[in-house]
Image (cartoon, one colour):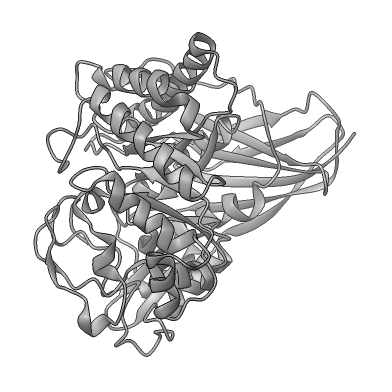
Length: 457
């Protein structure tokens, strides 16, 4: 997989979708990735997404594959044979057990095209596009509930058909009105910030979109990728503060717009593109911090989509796919953090970067499940070289019995993952003694630890 905005940046053809593979299912998707999605309990997948969608015509991706047109990939270069289209993507989500989130083309596309797509997907029968779906073998409507109104429409330097905030609001309002006339039950994600240039225009973009479109939407999307740096603490700390800041400021803007415009509908944040590039433990720790940010802001972040789905498995061309530390960290959150986010106070030593001061070495979130009375504590030790011993003290309830720590770490931050070392990537579990007043634990340097402990009220 290459860098974004290049033809080699491919998370679909040849890996997730590969009809020639012995692991392919009847629809051409690899069963190892489907099984991974099931194990990770993926709840929704956004498609098409990316810059690609701003020049995409969904009608190119329906009907017999042999009759689908090959188009120039106007976003990334190369060509696209359109063998993965709407029907195939819906089947993939059925196989995983996840919901569809569809992103319409409000770049070079138009509102009519978006309405036809919705009609194809959700209208029961008796119209041109609903009957076309039935003709192609899909009698029942797909009932896709969440629709993105464009992708990164503020991306002036790179997006095809980018718009000013004012023009985007006009187009998106009319699109929402028209699409609701076809299916009044659908929900919308507005295109929020993606272009974080130095003047801070991204803040103005979100404000204008929220004030002009807030009564029509349920989510505002933001996109953010982890910024690279050769310096370890800049990479770990500065990017973490930046990522958290983007969520926090957007949440404040939502509340401001709702108060100013008297909106009564809930509006949440959808971080529907995020991730870090690299296949080593340093990049894994950055994704863990993204997930911690989502837990920390669970009152407003209600949806997120990890861009590099296929990188949740490592891949060896000769030997196959395997589970890396990234897979296991993602699973720790997606399988276990399924309750209420708990405010967690952290007091520890800090470090500084050029932009941010006083960054805690420990990045901590907690999630409590009322059904099982279980607390999961997610801890990233950002200290590169030193273990940190911490007292963990409940302010409500008592810790009972033994706690269990699941530890994911690596001696090397830079070594690429490999198929032959996959047994080393499985989390190590360790029992911890507790008493009603809490527990004490030492967190390894540059590591992720998830502590599971029962809380008795």
